[in-house]
Image (cartoon, rainbow, N blue to C red; front, side, top):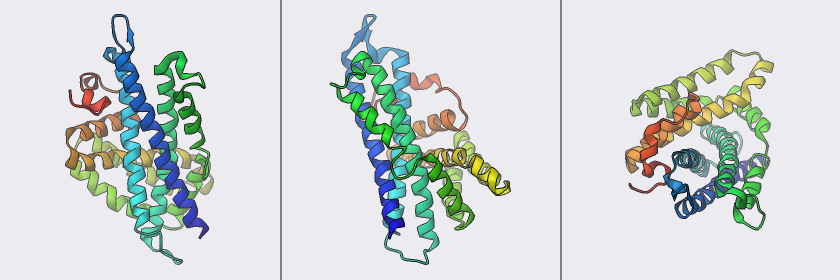
Length: 266
């Protein structure tokens, strides 16, 4: 049962990483509303809103991926060898979730320290502890190299990517936005590239592929949530795609949308 235990631990790591990140985001929101600089609250400064947007986008995407992976494994955890395609797909998603949520948590808590200023570095304050705790999440239960190799094995030997395509291509087609099309192209292109590589080359690209597939999945899951929870999550999906799939800066329209970067209505 070692594989099942390891998968559970990786999913727990993913959810814990996002819990730390969300706590840091909430504390920062309170801080920037109270703290003033240059005659106005920090939260009214565009650069602060930009950082809050980055935190909100990462947290929303990471939470969706982490909980989706946990939900699928909950439905397959009691399987025993020989495992079904459902089990292999659940494990496939656990690698995506564990790896990318750890990246997000480390960056969100780093931004939180920066927005707290000097107090963010002092060990007497919680924000420094959150960053230290977030930094262990990429290492526990297998660092990024291990997640990439395990994902590659799930693709090459278990064909787990076929279930990934079956779930996310229709989901992104249904969303129908330019950003959803980008996510679809990333999924198809990334998997095609891995399939066309020699074994050594596939390993070389596997770490980047793990992040790219996770990012595209987060876009799709945010669009799915938007169908239930409304425009905020469609905005977050678009922002995520622009930033992490295209490498663009966040568009300035998010500046005047506190519902995006704070989660609260304007």
